[in-house]
Every structure is written in structure tokens, then in C-alpha cells.
Length: 104
Image (tube, rainbow, N blue to C red; front, side, top):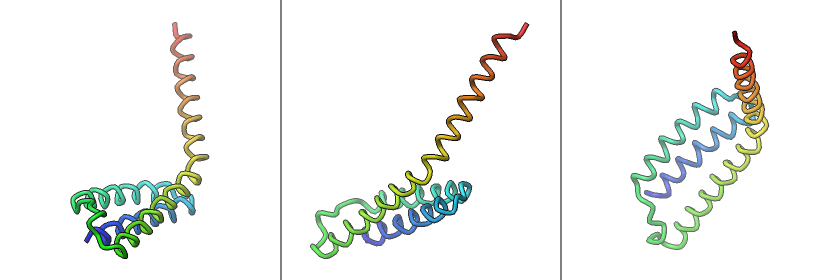
């Protein structure tokens, strides 16, 4: 049961990765929401990997490694975009402060 839950998270994280690779930020955000909901369902399944037999536990760890690899690549792909957003927000904030400082 837990392995199928992990598999659902891996599939959701793969959708996020594909959206990030395509630069489709709206799809990435939508996929992230679906992934978060899937993770919520995984948490409801429980997380008792230690009780699994060796081969099932190995499969669970392989899935977790795939999820982490997807996450790392998503972060690499989104970092430049996030820096641009942060720069834009910082510039907008500074412009508002300057405008407020010089208002009569």
C-alpha cells in the first residue's frame, strides 16, 4: 500500500518536472498543488517502511530517490525564474518606497 502511495507522489513530481522543463510555470504550480494533495494522502497511508520486506523496502527507497532527483532538477530549473521574480518584487518594493518618500 505505501509503495503505491509513494509511486503516486513520484508520478506527481514527474508532472512537475515536465512542466518546469517546458517553462510552463502555471502548469508547474497546478502540478505542485496536485503533488501536495498526493503527499497528504501518503501521510494518511502511514510511513512504516521498516515493516516492509526487503525487496518492497528497496523499491520504496528507489521511488524516494526518484522523487528527490525530480525535486533537485525542478529546483535547478526554477531557480533562475525565482531570482527574476524576487528581483522584480524587490525593485517594485523599492520604487514604492521612493515614491512614498518624495510625495508631498
